[in-house]
Length: 364
Image (cartoon, rainbow, N blue to C red; front, side, top):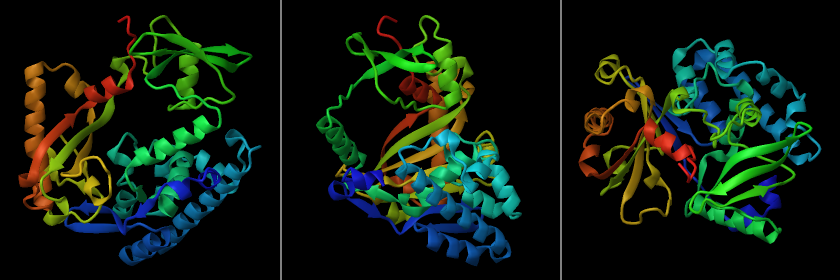
């Protein structure tokens, strides 16, 4: 709805990919089609004994999509006051609870959570409303890419904001908030490069964090607290992102889908501190506009912050080298010879994530 109102479809090209997500589960290989109807038909063929649950699951997906469309088209709506059937039902359950009520086959549950657990979420803890809301759009029309990378969309949105009289602050960090009558009056922000501080006010504020964390942060603004992460000690699981450049396209080694979720065998898990799954994202399958002469991809997996935080520089580098040997071993088993085409590696750990998502003050 808002994409159409802003004219995004007239200025930004979205490209579909037929085979979007693959799951490698032991000796089984599942292919996730990119369209919601095709995905439902595929699951019915692969899991005929789960027919009733599959039909109900996709009824939920379509129903949630309809409710969200209605909500987004009604400027008077408040998300906290949604009383639609699916939204109300999902709000009281975790995504794991929804799946356990629909399915008994563990393989279909792993398939329906394969992309979720590659990042930060435990499907038995994440809100059913949060995930089903996103998944309803993801399965309906979200499985596509922007030609020329997301920068094309960002540049167009920037133009829309500026033409509407808005201002964009780059390189600024939120340092505090002023409350009046339980409403945000303005935000204190500073520019990291210069240390310049200013106040920013508006009609609406969007925080990239849960409401609970934001409220706790606003109500406890002690001196020196300059971001929504209270302290490094409270960080636990985080993503390891290993960005790769290849001299040849990964598709030549058998990589068919953009996203690949690989469940490791028991033996493989014992070789890598109990790691259960890794993801391999083949960015070269779409026009990323990031490296025209190379083929870009990434390995993703979850790790504990504590596994990295107390290492010396030497031990830190050794751990990365050891992990890379094992990770490429796992990939070469599914995609023979893939590691031989890799020419560059950039390994980000939970410490890297902490560095990127915190905003130390210039005075520190």
